[in-house]
Length: 148
Image (cartoon, rainbow, N blue to C red; front, side, top):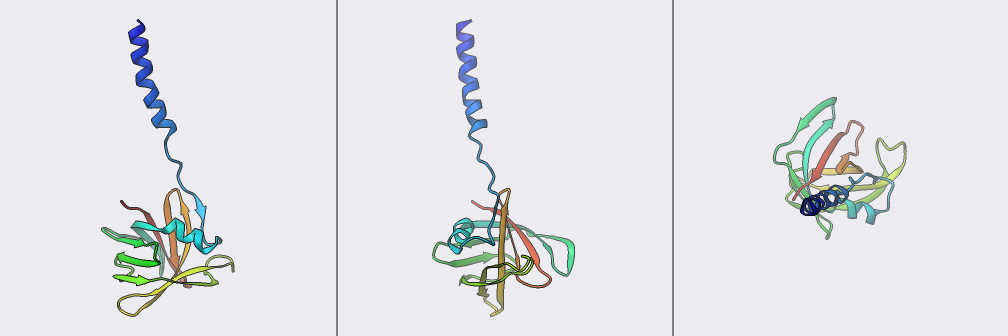
């Protein structure tokens, strides 16, 4: 009986530890934060899951095999159909962001490989999903998850 109790407790303890050690999801509004906080949270590799909005505000555009990376040296590397850049340097501009109730924010701006300028509002991370959008009157909202 003692062996059974010992064996049972040894099997329950790791299970409890796994359940208790589960990482809490990240939820943070980013557009109203200082630039270093925004950069910290978006640094790394991301997979673009889908875009929503644009001309058709309720349309969802899934993206297969779409990845981008924001590096510690302020570089943006993209493998996504919506942002056609190889490696470009990001320029951060403090300005009024669209859809932010008139609040100012840091806009992530760069020029892609076709010389098309882009400007994005880094909005938030909601349950580990990075949400950013075009800084325009009819924006596409992009939903991304961390990539390995």
